[in-house]
Length: 232
Image (tube, rainbow, N blue to C red; front, side, top):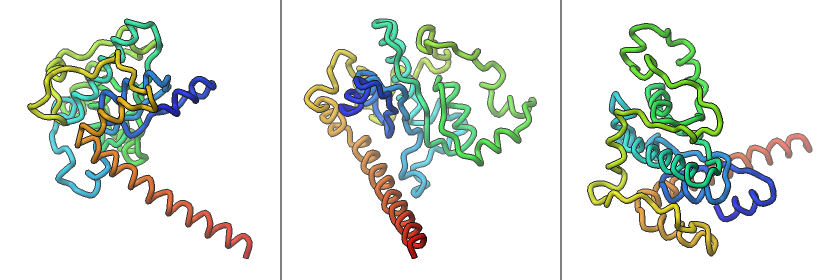
């Protein structure tokens, strides 16, 4: 994020990815990120099914849902206080179309969507069956105009998310991370401390870095192999 701030100052807007906490989201705003990409499901869930959400109403029961509401509400308050555009959410790591629709209900503006999920949505008939399965479709919000956070309003049934954070658990004190803290000062010292104090975020970031690192090694090997074939 400290590097993202430098890039913003040079006119290069960035996306803050691998986001799992409110301090990260506030830091991304302070860095001037254009987008942020929270992960609905952690990377490890795709190899360990016990970590994957199983509920029928992800907008209400997914453990990441309250965190997304906290981020969106905080961005809305930051916009109201400063008049400064806040990062748009490009939600990632959705496991099924139920979760895709849930993130729309939660208020996420954009989405990273897999091809087979897009095809499934395309092939889903918008009828009474679909509405009964996904009630959000019956009354979707109007297309928002920029600035996105000017008139942001959460759905009434999501109100309870403001009082809980399942990822922290019952020990959560109900206090949101401060927007007054300079999370980027001293190369992100405050942000690093906040991350280190949250075991869930530490684990998820470790898993992400390993996945990205493994993919980088495979990509490098594939590219070098193709170069060798061209030379040969």
